[in-house]
Image 1 (cartoon, rainbow over the protein chains, first blue to last red):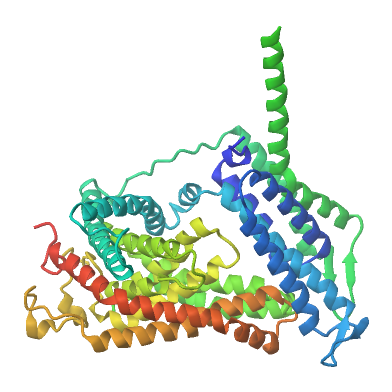
Image 2: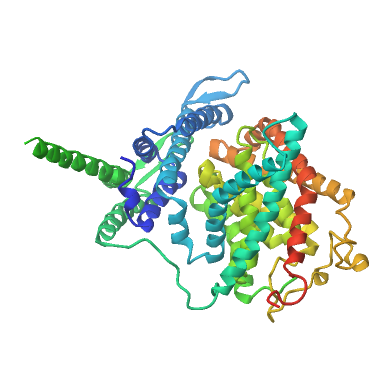
Length: 303
Length: 278
């Protein structure tokens, strides 16, 4: 299992999903929404990153969550329910602790969502989506991304050529090695700039920037994407309506007041959770289907 | 200064009006609570005019590729120093790009270096802030040092290459020495010193302050106050100091060879002498 099913959908669907999932908790600090978002983000990032080492991402999430959970009650003294007094004489209030926890869920959720985003929204999808809106910058992004492995290979080539004429960057004293390494980089940069100019002349010769040129794309918007897009649109619209109308709004200070309008709030929570968990559900369904089919194949073979 | 197309100028004015409107809307409708959300919108709006100006003038292939090369060098540089936290050459390379290619290209190079390097290091809530900080550094470097601007290969409206003299030559004394390669003088020591001082200062003042503000806004949305902001700035001092020192070191080492290489390419490919396709 190395290919994500949701990642196989059209980039537009992917981007809509992550745009919603990342921006809603940032703009709408509501405990139930945040808890649902965080749980979905955690589940999806664990699913997508299984087998891969993602220790850095989780470590960062935990660290930022701890900092924000602690910083809020320490610096924020609003709220009517005083729990105790801090050493500096300021009150520690229940509301600020709760708000700190909500902030921690928000920050942690955003970090976790980005871990999934990095796994699904590869750079080619981003360039495909934004190629028409910001064509020049998309081209720079895609060229820069291509240059990176290109330069690594070129550095290896230059280093071996330099070794051949007696300037080995991997042996000798510290300073001679630094000098040899610097020479390699210097050659690389000169080559990169010249190579770049030649590339652009070649682009020019092939008609870059002329009117009527189209861009190659590998993505098709098929019925599967249409269905998922419609489902997302309905779920997200329902959830956003509740946010904008204030049916699920919440006030933290001076005391916690959840202005929850029943049953709209419950419906909006359900829609939000469904929208956040849908891709994971698709992945799990596919895994189950795959295993079932695999089981059938093996039983047939053994018969 | 090149005259801006009407559409771009209009968009810029609109964006400038939008920022106070967003803050007002936040105070009125969200009761001044969603600091992070509002700061994100402002950052996005602040970057928009640069993007519009750049896209609006339909840059030539040569200009795009040279910016892409600088972005790739910055990203490779950031990746090469992954084991030393904060000790990164990105700001130095963005400053060199701004100085050699001009303010506009400097902004694009900075913003995209932040964006592209995060494809390797991971996108996150910090990405827009990094893009804006790097972009502004490139922009200011271009404004202050980039009078040579004559962005590589960018032809003027009538299709001919702009002569460097039009922008005034900042790096070489062209008037005295002409474009003779042998007579070319090396970039002066004083200029490198000024560049290093600028690099260290702007790393602290712009990148450090912006990213620390981002952190403060993220951690303490509602508790956001001068106290928390100051606490974040103070705890960020060691990190920003290392970052500033690294920028100075990289500029001291890289500025001269890099600028000379960029100038050499400009000259070798005939970017100053009328049409490139002679």
